[in-house]
Image 1 (cartoon, rainbow, N blue to C red):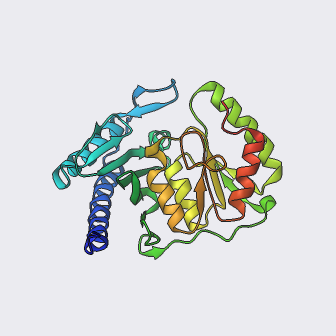
Image 2: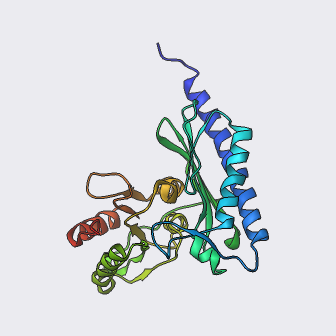
Length: 274
């Protein structure tokens, strides 16, 4: 028998998860903005010598996970810098404590804190805080997307040749070379290419119409979980290769019409190959 209170309970849960995500992102964002050391350096590397981690990445993730443990102790966690726990509530938090670490390391403004909540595997809440922009992007599944208190809307699709397209590059040499080949093929066929350095912000920029489209190979769930939901709730389509969802293999976000054109072009170019 269907529980008549289930939809209301689900709405209440989403509202609670949004409040928790907003507060966690705000705390981490303020900490990163106000506490950045003048002599910030690289604490470790991951996949290559240019794939860096700073002490602030680690501290930000701890701040977020400690807060989540206090507010939602039964939830699971998946964090970029190693935080991982199963949980028993059916809710999992997907955390990027600094998305755009190289930007942050160099004192550039395009970095963010990305926090998403999944319920039984489905992303239901996404929050991306960009303190140096003075903006927080948020979405709840089925309830639209917002930047601060303003509703976010993706652009109406332009012709492919007039599209401003964002992308990013991985840290492994062979992958970067392949991604450069794809960009070289695209540049003459679109308005221009932008490389911002934070996948979460790029996805939010699609949601706000600051980019017409975005694609990248090699993202991890913490890179796209929140931004993917925000882009979709703003009216964009998201996905990977034809018939596949967003994944580390390929992530694409664009309004209907442009999405299909970009996906098909990337398929022709084999953009999922390293």
